[in-house]
Image (cartoon, rainbow, N blue to C red; front, side, top):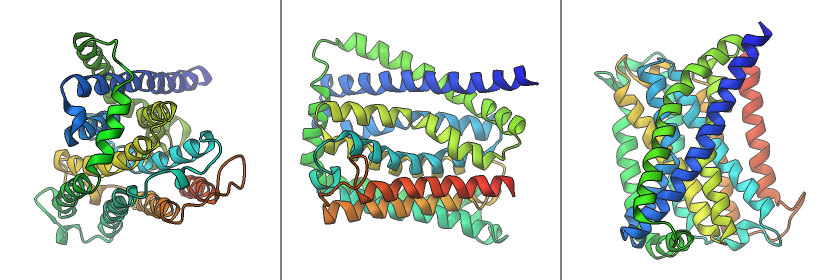
Length: 342
């Protein structure tokens, strides 16, 4: 029994390590390709990078819905990733010595953060309302009515942010791409494809391991998806954020985190399209709404920090905004843990 349990944990951590390594390299080679193809000088370069860092969430959710058929792990991974991505800002604040990141970062990020609140909260509302047994009133065929609205909101957000922040993103992406003058296009393309292959394979396998873990530990799939799968699939976001910090590209780091959350909700809409058993929102635990609203509140705190621009640091080199984000993350984890054991 103990040996079998250890084997399941080993497989899960192996998936995490492989996604972390491959996701980091995938992001690195995406930067090179963007630079050498001229994509780094326009909006496509940023979209390319944001899509790459969210590839593990996309692949894992596709496998969870089409092969393993565990919708709670799929949605839990997405909602939990939105929450954990904002915890990355706490890590960033801790590593950024001297001043709070909210004092040094551009206030222009408030637009993408505001769209994040709208998209995440709307998805959470969809999860919550779908639990009221009125799914027939809010869906057509096997697709929830929330899905096309999410798609439209995402496209509106991308265009609005492009118009508002084009010059800032252009500079930031150039800074990241300038790290790789010694890498050829052939090497970058080969590395990108191999890394993507690893992410795809491991991403498809991860839901099966997560299901084993949930069954063996007696945990529900919502808990496992939100707290374990989410952290694993968010490792590329963490890697590119830390890489941006090393070259003093703070605004690129924030753009990556906030942009990834926007794309995660777009993935949720795509998941509803490929889930052929009915409306995805109607077939999942309403407790996913807790993670959604937690992520929305956390994003609101980020906006407050960017507007208020606090200088002071309260504990271990982090300020009150980051402490609040961390508190909300653990509160969300506790609620899901309590629900898991009730």
